Amino acid sequence: MLFLRLLKESFVFAFDALRQNKLRTILSLLGITIGIMTIIGVFSAVDTLRNNLQNSVEKLGSNTIYVQKWPWGGFGDYPWWKYMRRPVPKIRDFDKLSDRLQSAEGIAYEIGIGDRTVKYRSNSVEGAQMGAASHDLYKTRVFNFSDGRYFTENESQSGRPVALIGASIAEGLFPNENPIGKSIKILGRRVTVIGVFEKEGEDMLDISADKYILMPLNFARNVIDLEDERYGPQITVKGKEGIAVNELESELRGLMRSIHRLSPREEDDFALNKSTILTAQLDQMFGIINFAGAFIGGFSILVGGFGIANIMFVSVKERTNIIGIQKSLGAKNYFILLQFLFEAVALCLMGGAIGLAIVFLLTILGRTLADVTIIVDSSKVVLTILLSTFIGLISGFIPAFMASRLDPVEAIRSK
Image 1 (cartoon, rainbow, N blue to C red):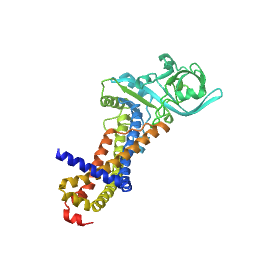
Image 2 (cartoon, rainbow, N blue to C red):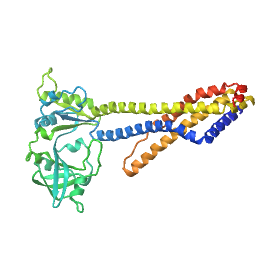
Image 3 (tube, rainbow, N blue to C red):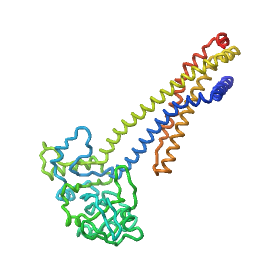
Image 4 (tube, rainbow, N blue to C red):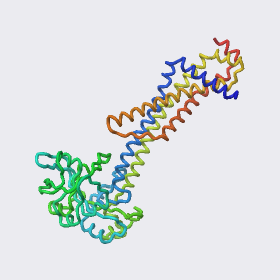
């Protein structure tokens, strides 16, 4: 009980000292506040960016592989001159894979025709992203419709002039009417709208169906060359449930090499791209960003710690006479030590709390004004509180230890 009472008195002495020197306390807080705000702010910004990018990558499918000419990446040793000589995926490749591939839930041939302007009467939408795909595209990715339906197999096979449009296209062309059954002009042809994709919003990788127009592949075949490299033809393969993506990749590689008649010594003349490639690159990039943020924030906190240590030395000097009186009345060394340690830790915790409050305020403003959800990781908040406490202990220990070792007679005479 005696120890707890002394602990309480040390706590009260520390806060009295802080309260009596308000300006000095506020100035002491700035370094820690800036450091904590920097660390949490950087981590929150990185986590938010990472989450948005990860959500975009997940749209590609965790068990989906894209057969393309160019491998994803482009960093480090990237022999682009070798990839230029590769052929694009052909309709023949798609047909043979469809017949032979055992591990696939769905397989589709896709092309991207590019950005075009779409018109309906006096309304027009610029930058519409047009594409065409074989019927089984719905098996390789999830399509949610706000109105209408997907292509029937007969429409896909016969190349009927029908199209699916994104929510932004529908809003721009048909602001006050139902787009289903209306005709729009695409690639010089009239097509009928049979479905409208559910609104998704923009994402970090610009993977969104909001400004997308999708047509049957056999319809586009009559208008453009499906195997022209300008349209980025690709074969999208989604594995069956329970089939590991590596198993699907292995089977797909063997079949593609067989179809292209590559000898064992020849390199692949195709790329098998999957979302894990992007995820690994994101992990590497954000690892560097996290380290840089932690270094900058840690340096700011270190500077703040030196500032608090300096203030504590001044505080010990000012209160030397009081320390002497306390020790002459029987105060133990640890009682004096705890006074100054509590004061240093309290300064750091208050600085950390202010830094966290500023970060949370910025998250609220971001959500309110910019409709951006900023992620603040609770584990990093706890780590920050522990870091503040540790900095306070380190900054205040030497001044507190010196104060506890003062000779009472010399301390009383100091004033």
